[in-house]
Image (cartoon, rainbow, N blue to C red; front, side, top):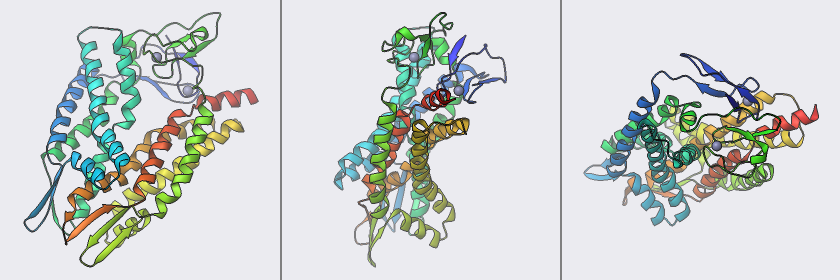
Length: 400
Ligand SMILES: [Zn+2]
Ligand SMILES: [Zn+2]
């Protein structure tokens, strides 16, 4: 059956796969489909397990920090409360969305879709729900929260006693399942179960749905995809202008994000303000090399790579060339996937503020950099989402 590569737009037909085989795009190398032995029943069991684990992860404390007999328990929700109390409502909203709302929504949608298919039903709405799950997957960030929590855990151990609590273990388990789960239904299988692929239209140009990769006649443009109900366009509308605007806004916010302090600590020996770079230097000085490398990668390297990379991708459509097309397509995929990990630093701050609140001994407050930094992360994620890699291939083709 025919399928269109979502990254380079090449129409190609792939056979039904047998054990230990994958189908990759013949032009750009993107994984199009893969055979999975374990089947959907495993994915279904995992999605139910992660849904059930998310509940205690949200209701029970993630960790506990104590100085002497004075204890503070940290919940996911205490991060939201602390951000509101520190007068950062937008940050509180983003933190709640990424760590509570979207994880529940994503797992809930996947579980509903897989359960429905498993029971043998194919209702009309199931394609739409699977599309929503596909679209919010990168915005559900329990795994990023786990990384932030681990950094907080190691940092607090310097001066205090800290323990991971039941909620923390549930969050870690749910995140591991969520990282592994897409592999069990990767590729194209669920879409084919929802509705089969169609043969490539004859005597007419075609377009493909950029979510479920269904190939349809070009006359369907601006109508809804029959499988996932996504509005169909030959290429994402206004992709270049939207990407340029989002990248430009990110450049503007990039400077305050690194210039202002990310956090302020109040201790008996004085008030210390830490910018992102000063925070990393402090970790190096304290001998926490591994943490310094993690934070440097998530907070400095990835945002820089994203901004430079997105600018390069944009320019390569404006000034097309055939060189390194596959490499550029790979780069776009990497940027799209890794961007979310930059939220580690804002999440660390959101977890530290409510827990490190020992009056007169140690207090942590959020600095001015937190909002611009979190906005840079979100805007560049939106930019990579609105960019259409197929435009680079079109431009190169038109030139040659
Ligand atoms: Zn391709
Ligand atoms: Zn579709």
